[in-house]
Image (cartoon, rainbow, N blue to C red):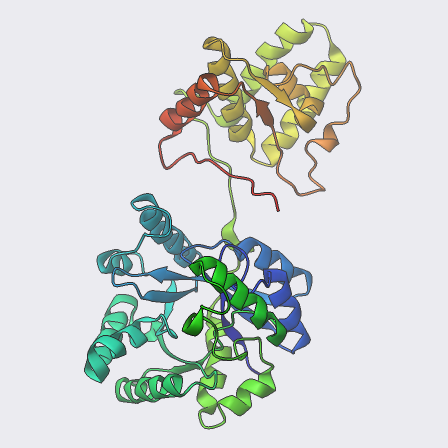
Length: 416
């Protein structure tokens, strides 16, 4: 059995127009149980890839091709949760210090943050190819030595790809010689750019768009053939019939890659507490202060509803989230910035008591489960409406100041 361990993605879509879901579907059709998706300088497609694979019980390995200072890319696979954290740290650093599309990582950063990551020697844009082109076999061997020093010998695999190109086979022979000399494992990968052969035409169109060319003038920018599609295990075994260990090693490496996105174990951040308080006690005090303001002291229905909601919030460890939203609303009110919570949060008596929303869910007999339910297993979503312009910007800057530059982020919704 062959395991596909190298599909390239960019911005959640492969260059040929295939989606992560396309890849997962075709992978399953062709009898593969696991697959790895490597985005370029990001993990854009990872969530959709993970969810699509989960639906059909295909194991989804996560990784990225991270650009080095010389322009080549480290093909990295995540082995552990630490590895995923390190990969995200590397990508964050390179993005924060450069313009869009221009960032790169430094070798010293890779040495420091290489834990939990598996490095391949790459295809056309990998470290071995770059070294061969700029210094020949001796430079390529030196580059592989550097990878072994950075990641550890046990975490470096010599990657082989076969797309029926003569220059690629010459590279494979050089890589094979280095692997034999250094006693490193071989790994057969497929460098997928689209799920099925007909999608190569879409890839060519996308290539022209990216380089501002027409199909008639794109020349060698276009694919040489239609070989960068997902191949079946039988096809890969035929391609590498002379190197069966390169096929076997894909299964062994897959077994090593224990991390999946569901292992992230996300936890909402804590709200900064005054001395002697816990998240639970502080939220309870603010909520009951709000109950007196909203309901007075004698509304037993409101008290019971608040107790029910606070118990679930405590069970799901969401106190910090409610307090952070309360804090933003409190700041806006103190600064005379109009702010209003809306959406399903209006079904929560806690949100009403904290002043986040303006609708009484007890009096209106609204259903709290529509906002937060243990059975649904979904995070609560509290939307705040703010005025555009300077007032909104003041609220955003408060969040950055309160929680730090690396403790807050802007999220963009791209509608397609």
